[in-house]
Length: 451
Ligand code: F0G
Image 1 (cartoon, rainbow, N blue to C red):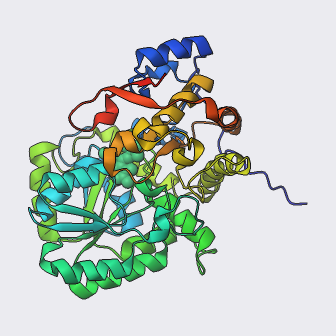
Image 2 (cartoon, rainbow, N blue to C red; image 1 turned 60 degrees about the vertical axis):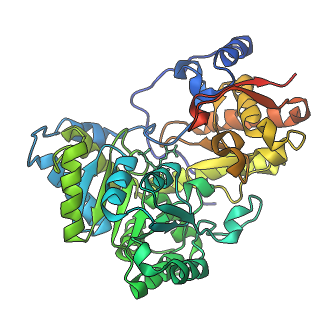
C-alpha cells in the first residue's frame, strides 16, 4: 500500500515555548481583557489562530538570505532579487515594494481612483474597502450567490458574479470604474478560491471595456493549489505555472507578503502601466520610501524574494491545504457548523448555527471565541456583528492557521477544544457591549456576558 499520511514537510530547528495557563487564570485574563481577545497579552494564549498574517515561520533559506540583505538606500541588490523573484511569478513590468498590503492598496487607489468612482471586487477585504471609501469612491462586492451560503458546497465559492459585473458596468458606465479587483483567495468570504475559468471570464469583460484587472494576491499560491486540485486541465500543472497563467490575465496586483510571501512584514504593488507606475513611485517616495526599498529593510526584501517562491512548493502547499482541511473536516464530522468546504488559510465557524439561542444582537461570535479561549487558550477572531454591526450578514469565528507554525498535534488539540465547547453549547451566554469606539470598534470594544 502506498503511504498516504501527509506530514509537515520540514524539521523544526528553532522553537518558541508555549506558556500554559489554567482555566482559572484564563477566566481572570478574559475578565481583564473585557472579553475581547484582541486585548489579551499574546503570552497568555496557548494556540494563537487570530491571523495567518505575518505570523508564519521562516525557512533556513530565508534566514540565510536575510544575512545577505543590502541596506543601501538606493539601488540595493536586495531589491533586484525581490523584483526578479516577483516578476518570475507575476510577469508584471513594475514592482513597487511597500511595508504591507494596505500600503500598496493606499498607493494604487490614491493614484488610480477618485471620488465618485466604483470599484468591483469578488469581496473587498476590510482595508481594501476602507482605502476606496476613504477617497469617496464606492467598493462593490460581486460574489456569486453560492459564496454567501455557509453550509453550501461549491469548488470555487470565491468566484465573481460575471453577469453582475457586466450589469454594473452597463449601469454606472466604464468611465467610473478605474479597475476591477479579484481577491485570491477570498478572505472575507471564507478563504474560498477563484477558478481560472472565472479569472478568464472577468478578464475578458475587463478587456472588452478597457478596464484594468488587478489581483489582491495575498493568498495567490493557496488559490493556485485549489485550481490544481479542483479545476479540469490543471492536475498536472505546477502551482507556479498556474499562478503565472492567472497573473497573465491581469494588469497588476497588490500583495501582502505577510501571507503567501512567507515573511513577517512587507508587501508590494505591481503594474504593467508605465504612467501609473511613475505616479505610484512618486507617492511611494512621499509616504513609504525610495522605490528600491519602499519602507522595508533590505533584509526584508530578501526574505520575501525567497519566501514567495517557497509558497509555491508542491509539498508545502499539499501540507498547507491538507492541514487546514484536517481541522475543518474533523469538527464538521462531529456536527460543528462551518463554512464549507474548508478554506485555504482558515476555518470559519458559523456562530449563529453553533449558538442558535443567542441572537446576533448578543454577539454569538464573540461569545463563542471567548469560550474557545476559556476552554483551551485558543485565540480566534469574530467576523460578524461586533466587527460589522448591523451590516453583518453572518456571525463567523475565524480560526486562521499561521504558516509552518503548528503541528498536527496542535491542531488535534484545537479540535478537542472546539468539540468540548460544542458539547456544552447550550450553556453559553450572549454578550453585551460596555464600551465601543466610534469606528473599527471590534479592536478595542469591552464586553460582558449577559447574566
Ligand atoms: N487583502 C487581504 C485579502 C487580506 O487578507 C489582508 C490582510 C490585506 C489585504 C491587507 O494586508 O495586513 O498586510 O496590510 N489580512 C489580515 C488578516 C490582516 O488577518 O486576514 P496587510
